Length: 177
Image 1: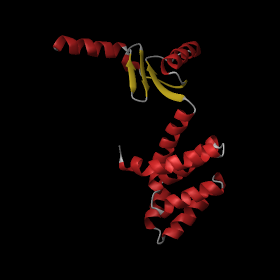
Image 2: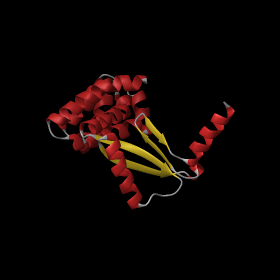
Image 3: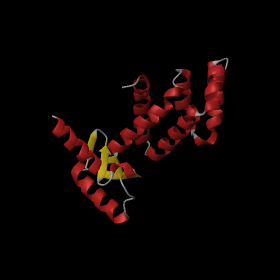
């Protein structure tokens, strides 16, 4: 676990709990995503490292975020700025997303195939994965011609390597043993 993740965890949890209480998960996700994008901007990073006072850094940061943040979002960003944690915003966003997915009983599944999957194939895959994970599944599909055929599926810590390349690698390893 990285230091930024450790720093970000309590902020993500607090933002998530507040968003759930107020029925504003989507809104908070969008606000944190915008604030995280600002935090990763090179110009903003240069400014934050060169600004004289913490108050000036905070005020400029909140002004840059402008109307993208409501009053509560601005207070959240101010708190992070006052504690010198703005660099952790991308990690806050990632953790917020994990908490949201867990809350909504959703899992994001990365699927890599040798060719683009047809809509029917994606629908069948979603149905099978929802049954396996007992959760709503959101697919992120990518194409990698190097896997030859089959699918490489990753959902959190779970990996299913059904690729031809993976099978060849396992066979080669078994023959070497």
